[in-house]
Image 1 (tube, helix red, strand yellow):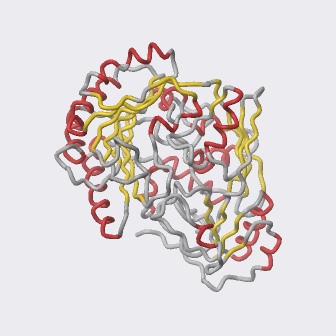
Image 2: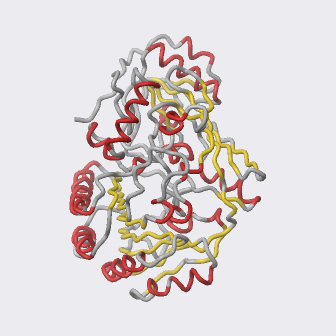
Image 3: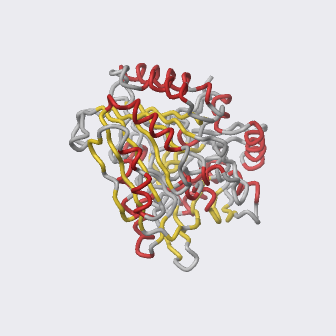
Length: 467
């Protein structure tokens, strides 16, 4: 059963929140709807109170009030990770906290709670430096990193959380802490892969890479060639050096203006890739993929790192979506057959916008330099699905297709998911699939220490033993 999150809608005295510099909003206020709306429109929030934090002090004050009134707390920067609506409680919006500072000598970035990856890319590019961002630069840095952070260049450089040096966080007792591996190792561990279970992060400092450009883009084939491309791509991935990062994607794109021609309204198989080595060597490695079937569009080029949105072409406009993922141990021929039976050309009306297999391994399989809560290092591939929900009548079909595909791939699953791509979290057993039993137990104990009252109970959270 899904956990419920309820706060009486007759909120306690708000006088303590009068010290906050940003807006404090209630349902019915003019700016309320805009403040609670995030990227995933399928998760429209209805908190009792919204604090639009203008800085760290506002978050400390909001958490102090929440602790005193026993009001549950949620946090939102961009809303890319929102998977179900918040009902009641306090929502802290960090969208105003977008500062980014680059230290070129140390090769680090220090970012505020609401910064997006595009803010970091723009700030780091003049120094020839790059962060380990994901496929969309519109996503928030903090939420992505707290969930481990699966970068476009993950096979070459590992997880984004592996590069974190320090975290500034407000724990549920309203204490502002600067956390490193040396100062508070358990808290530092939980903040890197444990999502938002133990505090509200106000600032991150992480390492940057000396990487001004990459070879990257997408190779597109007509959907009827999905099987040939999949089998070629899967064989190809078994031969690659770690510098080659790629994904196989089936796209069923609606005929809407936001999608450029000629992709608009089409059924496509795509191989998206990024290569960090010599461009000529990378181009040579692509020969088998380009020979798999007739290529319709080929956008692979040597591009500035800051232009990496061109690789996956993730949507920039908010939309209502349902996502899910499964981590896979392997992708043998029978697994490919099972995948195609659910997702290939034989299912023309499948209501899923995107079905993607990401090649894992490489540096993503290496132990973390500093221990963290990421539990995806034993995966060879990751299956992600995204279904768009334009109207309530579509939801059942999307849910059915999502469940059928992930169930069909379960024989090859590691048994786990990635917390950022898990999708709508269900009951405690379902949420626990993002971690191994050992990590889940440790995360529960750490949560019990820092959040015994379970104030941070929204989203993909664990239940403290004290609750």
